Image (cartoon, rainbow, N blue to C red):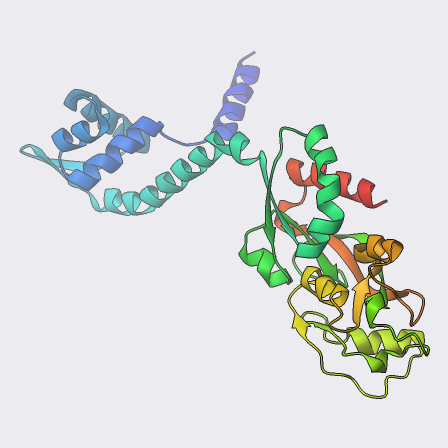
Length: 305
């Protein structure tokens, strides 16, 4: 029986953290800051006797005096000064993390989503009401960008990006593969002969400078000279420019399917070809497993499938 009690005592001694009470630490920090029990008590909204009791309790816990009593002032020992130097940042961090935890449920309802402008407006937005209907507890906050760096700087929880899927420090899941076509406005196509892309100014996307060369290689098309054409920041503007007859453009088929079916655009040069890259859903490795990201990721992958 005595052995059993001794084992329980040892277990509790080993498992219990060697920490004083939080109120004792707060009183100690306040006295160290103000150098006086009265001022510390006013700051903490406690009585002087309550602060004094907490200081004595802390001294008992650490088994040594922390202050020398000189008249009405408390002069800290060298050990107390070193302890305070380490304690203050720890209490500050504890307070910050506690406040974050208090507001966590509200924060966790907001998903900051980074989107390529045209992918967002033409592919995702028409589908997004299904997600908000299924998950009304998650609020979507949309920001737009063109590059990986744009989305990192915007502090997105998750983003849809175009590329090869290799972004160090980030988890990626392939979402949608892409096929492209060289398209023009039907009014720009001459009626007396088969058109050639060399007949048109070639419109360009800033983030895809090799699009025309890649398309020419994939289709076996000879482009005698690359015609200098207007450069655009996003596909939405380039599609409108193509409709207006400014030139020919390499455009993702999924963005202009309706235009091709309605005859607002035509693709007389070749069949669609597969792009070398794809659209991916991307989020930082440190956010992996976050519930709101998992919910959105799984929904988006099912939509793409």
